[in-house]
Image 1 (tube, helix red, strand yellow):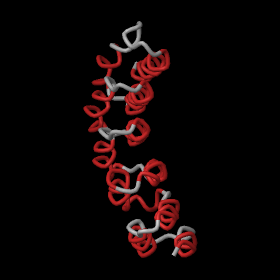
Image 2 (cartoon, one colour):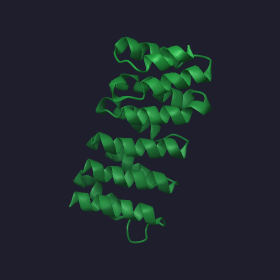
Image 3 (cartoon, one colour):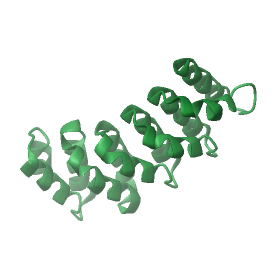
Length: 169
């Protein structure tokens, strides 16, 4: 099963995607990991919901691979998956979700990203600020203007906010 997932990951198509998604539920973590590696392509963006379930409910050892796979399949169709993951308990998951929401360049992500500007982890706040700049919606300006000038204690967050504000000008 492990070798089959590895081989399938070299091909495309809906049948391959369906087989790899089915392998995510395999009781053997190495098989599920191989399926995640195979699904880590934009072509398989239809599998984002299933991979999101692995992040939320799956084996802890698979979470990093699942998040990495999700970041490779950023499409507007998966906006809701990334918005949901922005509330995850894990800093890395929230951080990747914030950055990926920026890659989508969809203004519907603004409320989620604005909320992440208050996250406890500076990495998440910095990625949220950067993502708001990537989206480029002027509605983000007042929220970003709160971050520079020592309001946020982290220099990287302030720098990300300043760069985002420059993109909005």
